[in-house]
Length: 296
Image (cartoon, rainbow, N blue to C red):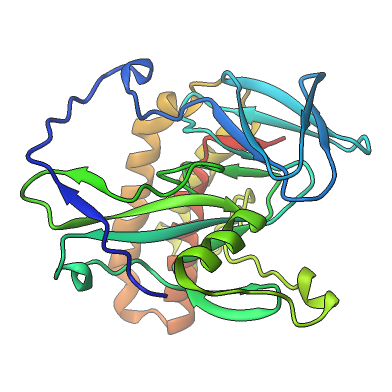
């Protein structure tokens, strides 16, 4: 994929960090997007309220922290919790594939300084390496699938940054129809399926894992500290308190530090497999405590 050099430097920007989310004009808290990439009208319910969306459209609804329920047109129901630490997301009752694509905005001559991560992804049977994450989760959490620009809103032609900055990386959420149109328009990449069967060959490279790993460390001290950490995560998993992350934050931080401290002492004598397990454990527990929305 080519790099988009779209940055416009218009002088120094002043950023004011508000303590309250409601005062932040860029906050996406409680904002949940949905779209209809099909040729038929989309219908579903959230908290017993009907939502209808015509083909090719995108919309947003606001959900306050607390328990909610979503129901598809076929009657399948998903209960889910929205926590106070949420930054919104995508609700996806029909498990469509959604994408988060990164673009580089750079002052001319500086594009090579910005390199978004590249992932393997299959779209319409085309195997590609692109700065794109894909998910078909019923709840796509913007704490971990964080888009600068939501469904239905285009990447801007240029952005404003400080005079010292030479560029930035921005992300945008797409449904499949929107992404195909963008790639064809901006890059001349027409990813049409070679056969009708290829239209369903779309890979998922971003999984939301809500399982809390069972500690299985051979080192007794690491095992003890890891168990303390997962016990705290289980409190999040079972709680209906929207502020649970904030209330446990200090203990979670200390527990994570203690796991790392114990593991460092034994790593010199650890096998490759043990070190890989440690890394997986840290990544999985770290993601779990980050979720702002969770199926129940």
